[in-house]
Image (cartoon, rainbow, N blue to C red; front, side, top):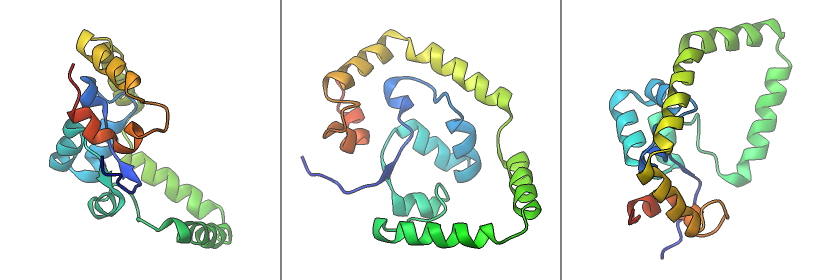
Length: 151
């Protein structure tokens, strides 16, 4: 199997037969738009950092070797601003862009319901037997692994 380099982003629940249960539907629908969110969530594929950046899933794809310097410079810049501005801005952006808590709770309930279905349980078991949650090869090739399941 060809080892791909990461990082990768994905929303894997549909591959198990479940509904994302922690706000992924609302979050990705708002960030990516309806059509792209449908593709990402329904496909359970892996998406590389460059595509995630282009689609607006992440702010920017920064090479690992540059990440610490970028974050440090940004944090120091923001730390010099009067606190009221950034606090108020973050609050308002959250107010207009995040889903209401009730929507996330609805998805959590749907996740609990769908992940208990027999086929979802079988697929979870198959993935666990194949190395899921071990940081092994399956974890680095998760999207394609979902497409190879027998259950």
